[in-house]
Length: 313
Image 1 (cartoon, rainbow, N blue to C red):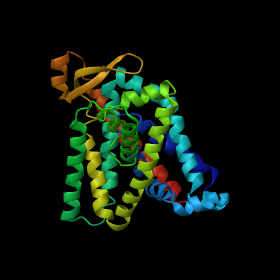
Image 2 (cartoon, rainbow, N blue to C red):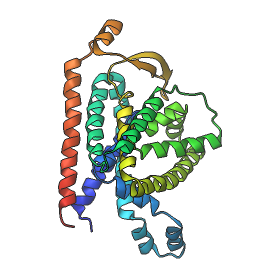
Image 3 (tube, one colour):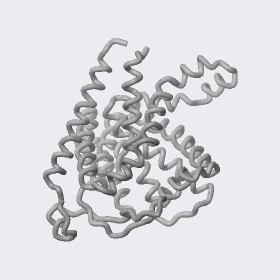
Image 4 (tube, one colour):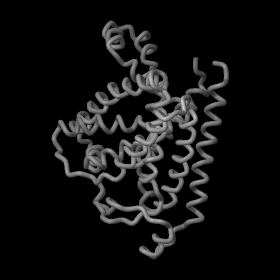
């Protein structure tokens, strides 16, 4: 049984997941993996099944709550919600005003996260190697895809929700970035800000469909092909580094939900090229320091998580 301290730590993990999920290019699944709750998260989501529905409709609330690991899910979701509500605007502001420093922090965070995840590859053979390369290639391809013009019909909003939530539970694949690719990032943000209840509900239904089905697939893969699955997940993280490279030249802009111009399409350059093309300071020293902070942050989080996990319950 978890103590109050355990639930407080779990709430903090949820807050960290939420802050990652609001940034196109960073995944809350990465945070779940490095903090040691990824498998429990998948199994808890997977437990929302026919048996859970039977318990609920029979008004066996205590058994239902225990079956779905309700305390875990509610605490984690509360942390994610707190983060999304309180940090979304702050992260957006920091990305707009200090993009190099923010991306540098996440670049370091993702590099060390990929290394930590790769440690869990038990069978280090050609199959795992190929799986890792495929994960890298897929994630890199996703980061290179240009956002599309897509319909705003209910069925596409439903599909967008399903795909975005699937990405959010995959380390290295950003749900926010998937929405950006599908041309629905701005649309969903606008729906949230204008309290468009119909659009929000359709999107939530899509998320529920996606997460309930996809969590079963990932959980099955981890149970039956752990090394290959972990190699793919580590590959996803490495491939996503293309998106979080700190030095970018903006090719075009878009209007956000506040009518402000924000970067839309860009391409990566080296620090000296950034200086030559923009005339702006590449902040190389500060970027290296922030990347180091990202690395140290993950190491600290992992050590804290391991210490709590090793304590007797």
